[in-house]
Length: 574
Image (cartoon, rainbow, N blue to C red; front, side, top):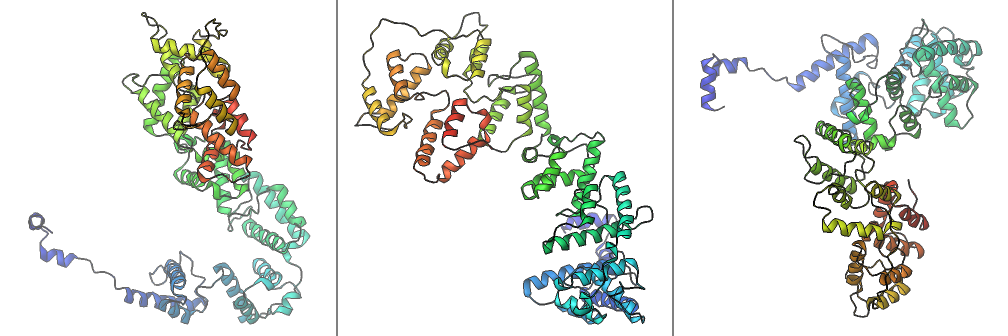
């Protein structure tokens, strides 16, 4: 530490001598392991095994169960890296060879219970259904007989030590749990439990009205999964449980099923799902679980996805980014502005109650067009104004905001209105309605007696269209040393401003009906590239694959003619 810090500490009585005296000694790991090993040896001497030590087990003031769990995790990691057990694992194996078995601890504990039964002088009679044992142990033993051929060789060797060989396993009597009377009793308890809790995803230690329902259901799941692995049809018992709860034996974990059921029950009780606000109406643990489902939605089983959709968490909702506090403030201003003006077609400089609404909306439009991941704020804006982010340009905004000017419409707006008259039949119905609301209605084609000279570019456009089937060429395209791309760009600009001669416009429409589409020209050019590859039977390039995915994602924002053109080359909405 800095000398000045040391002087300040000395002023409050913390001198170097006292600091050294108060410094805690670090636990010596080797000594601690030897002490824990001695506790493990004492426990094994008393119980005959180490697998019976649960996480709550304490031996000589040492949390032995937790310590053993940590040693198992460390040994698995060591074996994964080195391929051999660690020295500490070997020391524990000297106490109990099966302290860390390659199968479940539950299996090893049940085997130890059966081994103790045999050591006490009792025989295990497989043909008689293991009389003299508890119901749970008898069921476990008969399950091992039924699954004998699927067990690991070490498990089969352990079973042989308690008298269950391959021949005896094949001669075992029917499983007690499959007896009709016993199953009927368990089924009644299962039906009663489901009526109360709405699910059969009960934990293994669940006791319902004095009946060990959790263990009984686990046995039924084991039987059902064995039948499924063997390819046999579902048993009558499995069908009976399916009628109570279709997901009583799901292909995913029961913990997941229980978590889903809790959320489902709360939503049924009136909880608001509210995915747009990070599921704020739920408890922290349930919020965490719901966010995990959103993050890993594509990795879930189709059945899990259907269950989540039932509580409102669809694929789209899972992909939608929730609202931030700043976005909520911005949306409040957007709602207030739309309530007063009936639109969100605002200028970039618009400020509402001190909030830069125009700039924020412009940022949202750019983000919505750039990204494919849906945002909750964009969905909220669509609710406020369906055309807050139209697929056409925002020149309409200027026309709307200048309608009431005392000095009349600006020249650029008058030119824009003339262009809408010219392109009226190519506009979307929504555009036509917006223009009608402003008092802009279609006009008949203007008749003129003026004779326009034929443009020199028409001959080149005709030759290019005959060769390529379209006029969606790039700006730098040249045809027989004529700057055709530049010429077409000028004609499109003139057409959109209402200044193109009727003769030229009619001639170009005959060559390519969509030579001047109401959507971006770059879209039309990319479409023709995709069409050429489709007609040639070629796979799309990576860039075109990304483009086609964007069209599927944004299908509802496309012009009906764009949708028709895409359908013709096999591109359909998702």
